[in-house]
Structures are given as C-alpha cells and as structure tokens.
Length: 448
Length: 156
Image (tube, rainbow over all chains, first blue to last red; front, side, top):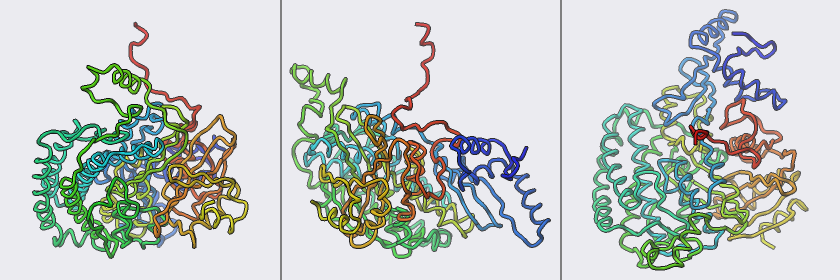
C-alpha cells in the first residue's frame, strides 16, 4: 500500500478511482470522495492499527474508527453503503454511498417510445411500481391534454391503494425483522401474497405491472376480481389488529423506536423529506389531499399525523395509513362509475382486441401505435403522486417526437435518504438500523 | 401576466426573462446569473416555496444554452407549484441553491454526474450514481446508449 504524498491517503481500489476522477476534472477531492477513499483502502486490521497509532502518539485522544456498513448488509434494504465514522458505539459522521443499483432507466427511456417507457419506469421503486407508472402516465397525459375516464381513475385509485398496502407490509415485516421481531414477517407476507395475487389477476403480473396506460388502465376488472378484493379488504382490518398486538406495546419494539431518528419539521422540509417521515413530525402534507389527482377528492379518508417524529410515530402512522387505504378501496368499489376504463382516443390508445379481426382501421391504428408510438406535443410536465414513501414526481420533457426527450423521476427514497446523515450523527450504531428502516428507502428507487 | 411573476419581478427586477404556462404549469425562465436571487426570494415570504421538490436537467444540443435546468418548487401552504428554468450554457455552470434548500445537495450531484453541469458553491460536488472515476456524463445526448453485444452475432 503506497501513500500519495500530501494527500495522506492510502491508495488502493476506490481511493485511486476517486483521485483519477478528480484529476480528470481538475479539482480537489470532495468531502464524500475523501471519505470513500479513506474507507475503501482499509481492512479492519488496518483500521484498528490506524486508531491505535493515533492514540499512541496523542494519549487521551479518540480517533474515529471508519467502518463500511454495506453495501451487502441485510438491514440496509438493498445495496446501500454507509461509510461510518465511529467513536466507540457513537456515530460521529456518516456518508451514504449509493449507485449500486443504478441501471440507467432514465437514459433507456429516451430511446423508447412513451408506451414502452412504462415498462422501464415501473421497475424503479419496485415496491411501489403502480406509483411510478401513475406519475409517468399523468405527466404524459398532461402533455397530450388527454382525459382519463372516471372508471379508469377509480381503478387507478384502487390499485394504488392496494399497492400502498403491499409496500407498507414489506416495510413492516422487514423493519420488525431488523429489530428481532421475526414473527411479524410471516404475518405480513401472508397478506401481501393475497394482494399480489389480486395484482396478477387484474394486470397479469404480481409485481412490476404496467397496468396503468397513457389514457387509463390496460383492462377492466376481470370476473371474480371484485369479490376477491372485497374479501381481502374485509379481512385486512383484523389482520392489522394482529400486527399491532405484536408490536404496539411490545417493550423491545417501543424501547428501540421511541425517540429514534428525530429531526425538527423545518429541517425535514429543508431536506426535502416528504411522506410518512414528514407527517410523523406533524406536518400535514399528503398530495392526495393538498393537490388531489385521479379523483382522490371524492373519497373520505384521514391523513394520520404523528407528534414526535420518531421511528415509533412513523410505524404507527404507516399502520394507520393501511387502514385508510382499506377504506378508500371499499369506497372506490362501492362508487365505481360505469363506462370505459381507458380514454377513447385512437391516436394514443390501442383499439380493443376484438376489433382487430373485423376493422381495417383498428388494425392500422394498432400497427402504427405499436411500431411508431404516438407523438407527444412539445413541452414539459411534472406530475406528482403520493407514494408510500412520499412525493413521487415524474418530469417528462417532449420534443414533439414519439420518444421522450427526458424522463426524470423524483423518487422519495432518493430524497429522504439525505436525511439519514443529520439524523445519525451522535446516535448509536445500533439505532442506525432503526433509522434506515423507519425511512423506508427502496434502493431501486434511490439509484434508478 | 401571472401574479407570481409580478411578485418576483417587483422584488428581483429583470431576473425573469420569460413566462410560459402549459397544461396548468407555470414556468419562469430565469437568467443564469440571477438564479440564486430568485431562489432566495421564492423560498421566503410572501411566495413561501419552502420545498424544492425536484431539480433536473434536459440536454438540448441543438439549442443555444444547451443544458436546460428545471427547478420544481412547491408551497406547503397553498399547494401551488412553480418551475424555474435556467439555461446552463455550453460550459455549464450555475450557482448552487443548496444554501436555500438543503435538499438540492444530492439533486445537484446527480445533475453534475449525469450531465456535467457544475454548481458554484456546492459543498460536496462529487459523482453520486456512477463510479467515482467514470468518464463522461451518461445522460448527455451525445453519450452513446451502449449495451452488451449480442453473442455470436458475427456468425450469422
């Protein structure tokens, strides 16, 4: 291991990469690059030796120990790496390193037609795939000035809320697992399977569906779907009671979540945090209420708020949100309007399958839409939906061609993860796991 | 002329160069050197755009100014949105808004990583998604899509 004079950095692996990148750009190493370079070069033995050497030369001082948490670590919800500076068990500083799941979806979208891009966008935040495509379709519809028929909007609401429940169930199960409540995972995944079966029934896929299309939904509800969905929402409140009976007054759960990961509301807003993490701090921001879309203004539901903004409040709030989602689905099924599930614009929407055998015009439209796609008027639009993690926005810029000039997703996981550093400073290492869990980041959404 | 534009015009005269409303969304085009002033004003009273929802960039190599930045502002009180548009130029560099909205930190790092737009005054402008020694900026239009070669494609 050689050391570059003047930098004081051991050169190995990523340290060399960081230097190379900075040299090419003609600049100094930044704070994050310095942290990554410093951590990568050290084996645990070397890290310990560094600390001991510092203590020997300056007795009484406490040099921080730098350790890598992740990227492969069961409790980081995917591949998240945290370069952590520790003083004993206390975190002095922390640098999140992301990008391990970066798949260039935004670049790919520019080379696909709009309807093809849906298939890619759905894979960003893989636990909330309906929300990804909802935002993308809404932005495209805005550019096209295309109206979604009421039945299509209701179907979108039903599937979004079902997706919110499945996403929260994964969060609840895995968060319990991280703190030792292993039982919970089996309970939540039992219900999640039922919800995923419903997704398969209506969309053909259990996960990463492309059920929402530009103009509405791909298909109407299949026979038997409504009855199964009603059975699911009848069962759910009792199941949620079960989860709560396992956790809400469990002394270990309460001790490990109370007072953990608190930041003042103003700081959270400054950091761009939205969703349950912000509402737990008492800020009433839910896009379904503040800027209703897809007919959310027709439904009667509460936006649960927390008071302390700690990990426990976030837990309590997400559980309440599942109850509200159940209510919304019930109301949407009761009030489901008659009519088409997708707009009737043959320049954008595929013709019904049955017509292809009898109508030459339908066949031509189908052929043109599949091979060329539909052109979208020049302009830009930003549409945001309230995903299980906060504001999920999609920015679409069009140059008038059938392929988007730019698709960008503002993913709440990406933005909320920024809050981890200020949250974790001065906290115990063990509580870091709770914080990561309570922010509910999905790395597919962070890295895109 | 919209009320928002009039308010900004009164406080920061001459900064807003153009205003477009499309599909109900208001976009204000701001001069590259006036961005920070406008951002500071928009974040405070009376407009109160406390939340920077999103910050991103689009590459238009065929247009003067080339890199078009879009700042999506959100006001918690009124629920209204505003988009600021800035053309970053061929040697793209604009002022960082991290001093106004801390959330801009990672957004600006992403735009720097993907487009090579530099942000003056950013505390830690390192790559964020790509490896640290990555060459080029992948979301530029002249950056090839790439992909893996299909095996045995020469044997046809």
